Amino acid sequence: MMDHSMAGDEGALCAPVDDLGAVVASAFRLFARGVADRRSAFRTPTVATVGADGAPRVRTMVLRGFDAAARRLTLHTDRRGEKIGDIVRMPRVAVHVYDARAAIQIRLGATARLHVDDEVARAAWQRALPASLACYAVDPGPGRSVAAPPAAPVFSEAGFANFAVLAVNFDSLEWLWLHHGGHRRAKFAWTADGGCGASWLVA
Image (cartoon, rainbow, N blue to C red; front, side):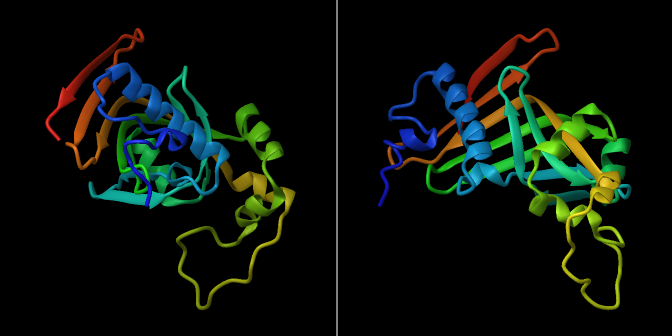
């Protein structure tokens, strides 16, 4: 069994955790690891939007990029999906990840921006493996009602018309570490000029 207090290889911290700077640095390492490591819990964050009916809509997505300096997550999505309309109406989104091995939960408050048929989308399309892009060629689009499950899609350049990059810039990060020696919780909030306020919270 892994000792959560010594989970440095997972981006977690050694106990006791008393340094807010170390906390946010460890959180950023976890997101960076999620891009590189398919087995990382941070590879598949949960992203929540607000639907037209005002209800939350939550789905698991694949993390494709992380820019610590810009505080930005990059994900790929189908422009025909319902989340696109959600984001157009309400760009504010929430992101949640729980890493059971490191016993760390992170929640982000963020603003999402869509890249469709632009340089960002084209560059992402060209970098991705064809196998991960085949789903964008499926017809009809995601969420549509069909009489039977459709055949497995195959890669086609025509799928680029349905491809979008979702850039999620976060301005708040809440971190929770579950530990037998005492849970720790902290919150970080960034201002428009890049300043950051940090504080401990009751877990």
